[in-house]
Image (cartoon, rainbow, N blue to C red; front, side, top):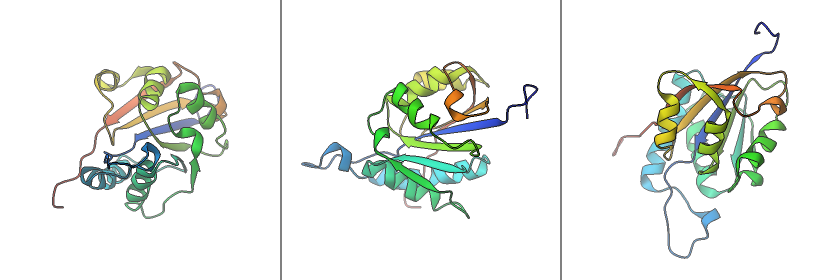
Length: 179
């Protein structure tokens, strides 16, 4: 607990892994590309190594986001519950904050698996400060499989507002070809 008596919470933002562009497939139904199928498990391992396995995951219903979630969670001994949320597909910052704000108060670490440009804009809006050069990295590029970890003190998720979080890390895990 902080001096204010509010618990430390973490919002872990994961952009879906690299997707494919098959002819005639609607955007929502696009699957992961081979690189995405390599990178998504690497994202799961990176989250475990960083001690950021969430208490709850919120995932876009798009195929590429669901596949990213499935491959990432397979790297954890005990995957958390997931809620597949249609509002996360093509969401802007207000929509993302609305979904995050509905998170139960007992959740300390929340994982959001969704899409750009909304996720990048969310991270930039929420981060009032950052450790190292993490904010500059997000401003430069928030590529597929990128992970941003935001920490803040709050009693409820609906109190998370722009400028109130600390961006503690920005990671871009990549899987190895042939491995």
